[in-house]
Length: 524
Ligand code: SIN
Image (tube, rainbow, N blue to C red; front, side):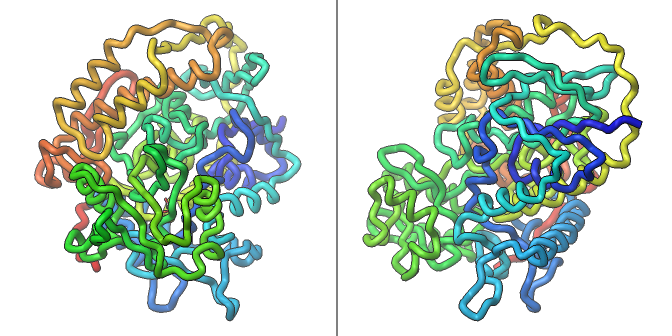
């Protein structure tokens, strides 16, 4: 039997965790539209969450995940992923992955929002993602080929199965890469908004590719806004990790008043949606917001990445006040997948932020995303090895001229501006309707894959995803986690408990998911 070929789209932690777990008998082609260094994983300052201390437990980690997720997590998925994640983090420890240690050589355990225990492992202070990518890249076998600067333009679906990827490289050459299985690991949709923590290359590609191929998208209304992006003159310059608040920093307004005092019992380490909205209200009332870091004496050693961001921006760490503002960080929803990363389209897998596994619910617990990348990358690799060869191809792939995209006659900046103004942290029916109408009525050009530019392709993917996200936000008439409606400000379990909004093949529907169990844990 000939060797099977698997194509992975993206080169972040989920992609490399998958590729590193594939045996030499498979040819694995990892394509990424920028360099291997350009991904959200590389930027990840936060660490990897797992219970380490005797007084902590897998059960407690799961409880915290469910609490942050606001009663919208798939409970079995949460338990299962945390157990598998615990094992994989211990595997990393046994492989001498350079997790930070204290002077006594014990693992240094940080704390982040909504965690009830110190259980965040970091590497390089605030460079965990970069170190993890390096570690996984070093483990890749010679069966894994990396193709940089090659964008996935479309999926090839034959007889209802995913049979390959149409790609376009930086010279404009279009290729049909045939494959026995395709794994999308493109990240989410951070660039739908003006202020975000994502890499510039994260432009909704995986969501849109999967949707075009007939897969289902779920939970797109749940968007996590991180409370603390470093800002100057209205521009976001990067993330200031929640680990900084875990070390004692506090949010203050321009009069030095604590922002989180009286808002939530966990104060500055409350779940992210709560902290971000508290900041937003203060900003609406006219105040600038700062992170007071004066209680962290060794800030520069402890947070080298953030210190370098401040340095480059001319923001003084010595003064002890970092200007911050919330911004888009993470999409909880994505392509619906099962425990193996399988989608509704046979031979198409999705892992990492592009997937919706049910792990994060309506609001992701801090430092659970690299954990999810490790778990689902590995699982998809295990599953794909049990997969039979796909049916022989007819050989009748469409001509490139037949692969056509609807490209809106607006710019990505126009979409970002509208999404930020009206589909962001606080939403309302009137504003959502306006944006939806604007997106729907947008004139489009039909451009085929040979003629389309990379920027037009990204615009097409972003426009498609913006429409679906806006529709989901309009339909969910309650507030929960990363979805807040000023006209429906309360969580409405009577009408929305266990309900998911799904998009598939041009239709939107509300579906009951049995695995989502109402969770109202007491906390703090
Ligand atoms: C952070 O470091 O604050 C982000 C970590 C995460 O998103 O999990």
